[in-house]
Length: 76
Image (cartoon, rainbow, N blue to C red; front, side, top):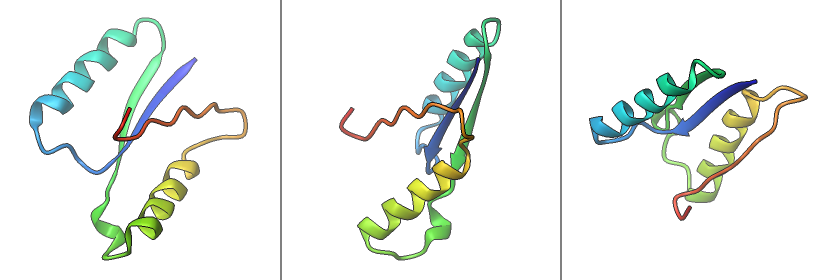
C-alpha cells in the first residue's frame, strides 16, 4: 500500500509541515508515504469556484485507475 497526501498551497506555519513530515516518517515502516504540495499561486486570479475546479483537476492528475481518493476540506 502507498499513501500520498496531496495538499493545495503551502502551510503558513512551519510546524504544520514538520508535523506532517513526522507523521509520514512514522508510517514509512508500514507503507510508502509521501506529501505533494500543489501550488495555488499558479492558478492566477480565478474566481473561487473555478480555482477549486482547477485545484481538483490537479489532484485528480495524481491518481491512477486503481487508486482510492479520500477528500478532506477545511471544515473537516
